[in-house]
Image (cartoon, rainbow over all chains, first blue to last red; front, side):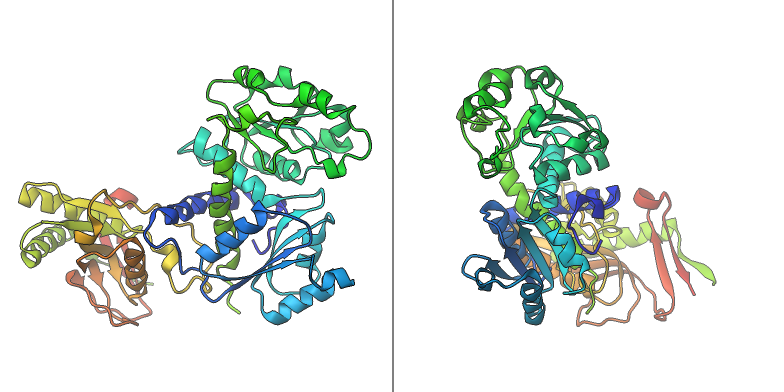
Length: 310
Length: 176
């Protein structure tokens, strides 16, 4: 595996190895020295063309715990706002000597373009590109699912996961569907018809228009954020109606299996796709997802930057 | 390619017994001893040594697993390996005398990584090293305290240690 711009860059063994390694990475937090020398002398550049809180700080924390040097670049306040294109920005990073580039971009396919263009030699990790993919989010979700619902198991077979909300615009959903399939989990997409993409029948997972019908069978439910910045075409009548039909509230939570769990990639719209009561309940693993994100991203950086003799 | 058996099951058992006695003699008993195996070969050997010492002394000796993958100095030269779980028993680590156990001592680089891994956990009173085979060719100033067998080899030869817990049989072979 040279780059990670899509879950399709991984086979099942590689994905499992990333999850297993993440477990060892998590142990570092319990030691007196919370740092590993593994990537000493390597440079990781965070290239963020789009706003992000948790992904950016998570990658930054991951790289620092592995002793790499981190340069964080955000498009605001850089030459990008003067009109510099991706190629020139990339070549600047190459000249600085980046070993890995973590890229978040508003354009779908930006990470793949950067990886395959020949502009740079460094490893490329996709931290979210448009409405395409967000592979490290899917990996941390899978890690959280495996640790809670299938401890001791290698893959996620026997687990049924519902992904609820704006599937149409969600890169998190796309990466998750691919990874859940790779790890033998069952998956159901739950959304109003307007928020399901047209080609969804080819995705190798079920879909449903009713949250209440799907909930009792699920071991885990992933609530997606309603991306208000992309809600410009009347996909549903209004926020209250969306919350009533597709929002997760305490009543719906009690209709689920007793040990089932709730995930959300963040940031949440409390009161919209998830009520505050559910978000703060013990069955919600939203804060563990953030903690696990650092371990999983450490694992991804380790896997991509091992064995690269220059 | 010629393969020759250098240690058989009974030789390995005798080496474990002798190393266990030497550890006790050297440390004047088993107080604060912590036997840590380095995966994969060192783990069953550490268990056997801890068990043997416990038998001799009549009290429990702690043992665990120390994975060193993430502390190696050749991360950028080799493909990624999945680390194994490090297991340190609940004890006062800084008071302990750690006996590191590995199957073969060669360049010494694994032990260097292990010393770094230990420092990240705490500051034990002493660290000692026990190996089943010492085959020479050190690349670092590291020496073992307890050796099962010294086996001078050429760098072209390869040594295979097989242990019951992993391979179903106890033996050591040298391949030319």
